[in-house]
Image 1 (cartoon, rainbow, N blue to C red):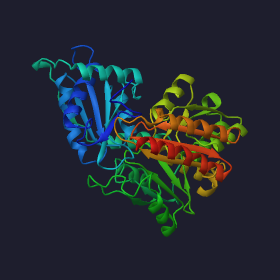
Image 2: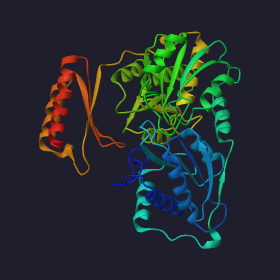
Image 3: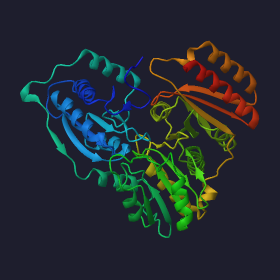
Image 4: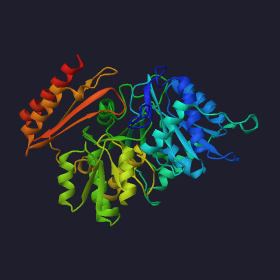
Amino acid sequence: MRKLFGTDGVRGTANVYPMTADMALRIGAAVGRYFRRDVSAGHRVVIGKDTRLSGYMFENALTAGLTSTGMNVLLLGPVPTPAVGLMTRSMRADLGVMISASHNPAQDNGIKFFGPDGYKLSDTAEMEIEALIEAGVEPAQSHNIGRAKRVDDARFRYGERVKASLPRDLHLDGLKVVIDCAHGAAHRVAPEILWELGAEVIPMGISPDGTNINLDCGSTKPELAAQMVLEKGAHVGICLDGDADRVIMIDETGKIADGDQLMALLAATWSEDGRLSGDALVATVMSNLGLERFLEGKGIGLERTAVGDRYVVERMRTGGFNLGGEQSGHVVMSDFATTGDGLMAGLHFLGQMVRTGRKASELARQFVPVPQLLKNVRFSEGQVPLEAEQVQDAIASAEKALLGQGRLLIRKSGTEPLIRVMAECEDAALLLKTVDTVVSAVKAATE
C-alpha cells in the first residue's frame, strides 16, 4: 500500500507533513534518482505550478532535490496541469512535476508526477518511489549536479496546442463567454485563448494573490460565474479549477452542467462522426446512472473505473478509448492531451455551439440525471471508520434497501481525510434515508 501518494500524487496542508519543504526535497531526490537511471548527461525534468503562495517553497525544494541527483530542471512557472503533461513530452523530458492541490483551498498543496510519455505515474511506480524516499538516495558527484533554467513561453506553447485541437476554420466570433479561472494557473492563458479565437471575453478569477485560489470561485463554486452570465447576457460560462484540469459549464440561463453532461455531449457527437474509439466512454463509479442510460440508448458503451482521472486514463490506454473523464469535470480527450484539460473541454463545448447553432442550454442537458446525493464525513488521522462493525451493518442495510432501485457507493477520499457516501435512487425519500443512515454510522465511528 502507498503511504505518501493518494489518488493524485502527494497532497496535504502546506508546512504540515507530508507537504513540508524537507519532504519535498526528499521526494525530489527520490524521483530524480528513479528517473535518472544512469549518469549520462541530458536528463531533464519540467516543473509547473499553480498560484498558491506555498508553490514557491515547493518549487525550490523540489529543484534542490532533483538537481542533487543530476537532473536538469526546467521551470515553467504558473501553467495548467495539462501543460506539464504536454511539455514533458514535447521537451523530451524524463519527468514532469506539477505543484498543485487542484480544487483544494490555498492552504493545501500537492505534487503530481508525469512520466516521459506525459502520462501520470502508475501505482507501481509510486510505490517504488516511496521505497526510495524511505531508504534515502545518494546524491550525484559534485561535477554531475544538475542545473535549473526558467522557460518563459510555456503558457504560449500550451495555448497553441489547445487551439490546435479545434478545426482551423472554427471561430468564436459573436459568442460572449464568461471564463472563471479560479485565480489559478489558467488566469492568463484561458482569457487569451478565448480572445484569440474571436470570443467576447468576460474574465473572472484572474487576480491571484497566493491565498485566493479557488476561494468562492471556479469549478467548485460556480454560483458567482452563473450570476455573471445572467448579468452580462453571456451565451455561456466556463468555470475552471485551480490547475485548470477540470471544468464546469454554465448555460445562458445560469444553470450548471457537470462533467457527465459534457462527456455525454462529446461522446454522442464523436460517435455520430465516427471519431469515438472503441465505441465507448470511460468514466468513474461516481458518474450518474442517467449518463449510463443515455449512452446505452445511443449504442455507446460505458467503462467504469475507480475515482481519479489517472485511473480513467489508464483504462483508456489499455482499451484503446479516446474519451473519458469524471463527473467533477475532468474530461480527457487523448487525441489531444494526456490528462484532463478543463479549458480544452470547454472550448470543444463552444465548438459544438458554433457548429450546431444551438444554445448552451440545449447542449448542456443531454440527459435527465437520476437523483444523486453525496455527503462527506471527515475523520481524524489514524481512524478507519469503514472497518467499524456498525458502519458495515449500515452499509449492508442500505444496499438491501436500494436493491433494484438504485446504487450505493462508499469510498475514502484519496485527497482529503473524508469518507464519501453517495447514493442514486428515483425515490427521493429512500435516497435521503439511505445516505443519512450510513453517514450517521460513520460519524458515530469517528467520535
